[in-house]
Length: 248
Image (cartoon, rainbow, N blue to C red; front, top):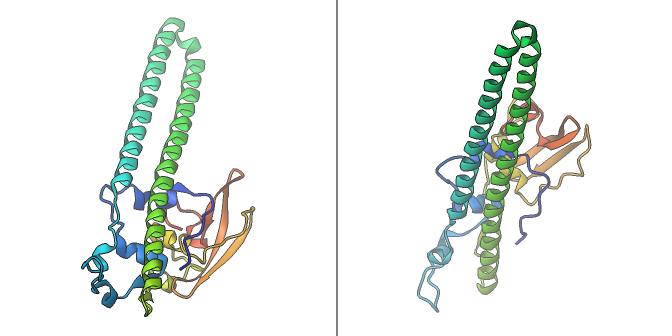
């Protein structure tokens, strides 16, 4: 069975909705869907002669503990960053009021300008910190899930090799094949994640103006475009998703 391949640069906003939820929803069935293959129900209910356990009970459930730790770190980091920015801004505005009282009307314009510049700088600083924290969260969660997919893939491959008959079946991974992304229909973050996690996902090295046509028997055909902001690559998006922070 093919393993999930490596992936290109992560755009964290594509996964914000999926990965910041307080209740993890990932499970074995979703892993099967992302892999595009699953064991037959007959095999899952078959008992292993050595242990007396059904094969289904021998397939481990997804452990979301590390995901929860990543979410906790994300929420704590964002809160601390926000409080820090608010505290700095409050202190600067207090100093500005004191300076304004001392200099009078003549100096108020330059003081206000300095405050606005500082406010803008803090907003940019907080925005950058938030993006970095979100990138750590989404990258971490994706790696946890991809690691689980790899372990399931290895286990099913071993089971299949030890069993005389084929125990695997293809599964329909999502309804993305029915979405017309060439128009105004946009993929959700979860749908896009399933495409980028699939074995068929193999975009070229991104350049400004580049496009990539993805094709899969189960997930359909979709054209993605390299999205750049201020010269920085932000990920591959469908036409409808180019102007969106979530989905694609």
